[in-house]
Length: 339
Ligand SMILES: [Zn+2]
Image (cartoon, rainbow, N blue to C red; front, side, top):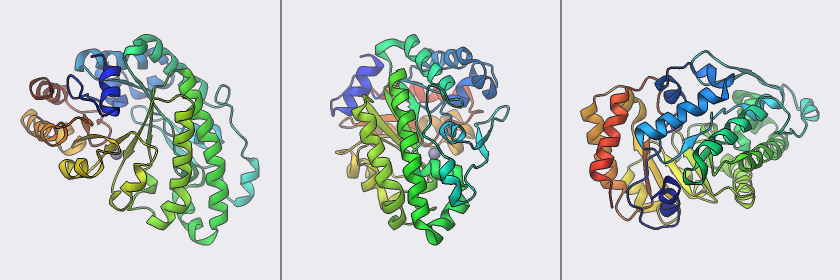
C-alpha cells in the first residue's frame, strides 16, 4: 500500500497492510537535516527536503507543512516573532480594544503576510511526493486565532466582560482561517491539521467551549471538507475529557494526548481514527530506546486491533529527540505493526 492508501484505509474503516505512522515533525526534521528551524522561513526547499528525508528514512505516511501556527494572526496585523531554532509565536497582538475590530479586513491568502510563502511550501511538497503521499497542512481554528490576535488572557477576561465582542472577534477569525484553509487545499494539502490548546479543559469551561469555540471550528471543518480536504486531523493538546464528543464532530482523526489509548479507542473509534500516543517529552526526548520500544509496543497492542489507528507521539516530536529513539519506534512498528 502507498502511504495515501494506508491512511485512507484507516479513515474508511478498512484494515491496511500495516499500522500507519505519522509524527508531527517540523523542528525535528529540520535539525535531523542539519538546519536551524528559522531557515524554513527563508528557504522553502530546505524545509521541503527535510520532510522528504524523514519520509524516506523513517517510512512515515505523510509530510507536514511548516505548521506556522500564527500565519493568519500575523497577516491580520499581529507581530510574529521567529526565533532562531524554535517555533514562531505572537509577540504583539493587533486587537487591543473592541474598536480595533473595524480595522480587521478579510485576508487574501495569495497576497498577505507570509501566507503566499506557506502555500508555496505546500505546493512544493505536493509536487515532490505526488498522489501517493498525503501532505498535511496546518490551519488555525477560529477561537485560537481570536486568542492570538487579542492576547489569550485578555480574551478570557472578555468572555466574562464582553461576550458579544468575543463572538464578533471569533466570527472574523472564522472568515479568515477558513479562507487560508481553502487556499491550503488549493495548493495541494490533503489533510488539514488543527490544534486548539487555548480551548481545552484547563483553559475554558465546557459552556464557553460550546458557545465561543466549537461551533466555529465545526463549521470551518465542514467548509474545508466541502472544498476538497480529504481528512481533518485534530490534535487535542492537553486535557479534553469533558468535550471529546464535540471534538469528534466533523473530524476524521483525533491525535490524542494523555489518554488511556485502549479506553479512548473503545469509546471513539467508531467516529474517528485514533492517532497517538507515545509520550513525546518523557519518552521520545528524554528516555532510552528500550523505553521507547516498550511504549510503542504497548500503543500498538492497544491501538492496532481492528484498524482505525495511526501510530504517533502524544504531541509534536521535540526538536532534540535522539534519532535512535525514532528508529526504535520504527523497528517496533516493522516487527509488530503488520496486519
Ligand atoms: Zn500537543
